[in-house]
Image 1 (cartoon, rainbow, N blue to C red):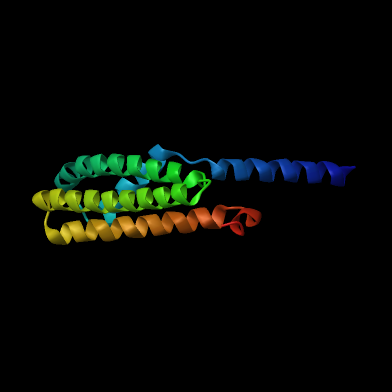
Image 2 (cartoon, rainbow, N blue to C red):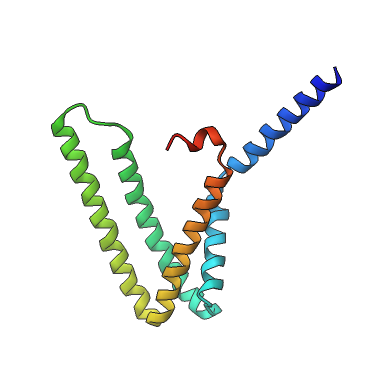
Length: 147
């Protein structure tokens, strides 16, 4: 009986821990991103106050394009014509994302030195790789095999 109670307790505890780890907080993610970029790119308070409002504006526009891309990818079209249309729409969104990125890089360069912008871009890439690695390591084993 004690073993059964201990097993049930351990099971409930492990489910609770997994549920806590699975929760994603956009606010926490954004705060960690800002902190990481600020530290890694060695931004002064003044540089950060100039950069991050522009960066946030870019991320909002990117997010809208990512949502469009995700909605296209959710359901496979029924016929060849629909598949062709979906492929072209995804390609167009990819182009729009790159054009948006290029335009905002130009905006960054008007306010910060090229070396600072370079450091920021490298820090952003490292942050996203780090977060993806953390998420991958926290996923249950049965979900990892499905991608």
